[in-house]
Length: 46
Ligand SMILES: [Zn+2]
Image (cartoon, rainbow, N blue to C red; front, side):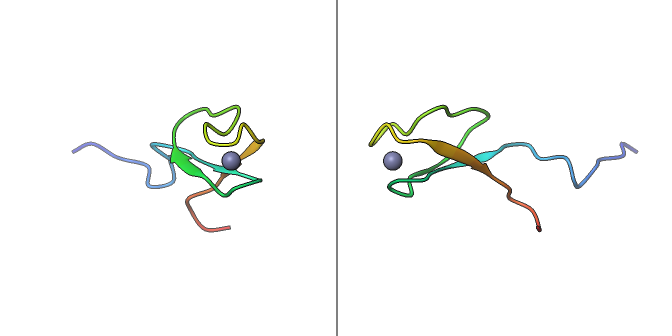
């Protein structure tokens, strides 16, 4: 049986600070819509 760690994220979510655009990706430097700054938002609990 394979042990899987439930706390290991398979993907990260990035959210634009300007327009709120969201994308599930491993890396997103700028928003594709408004070219604004993005931040990595956690999927799990805080
Ligand atoms: Zn944006």
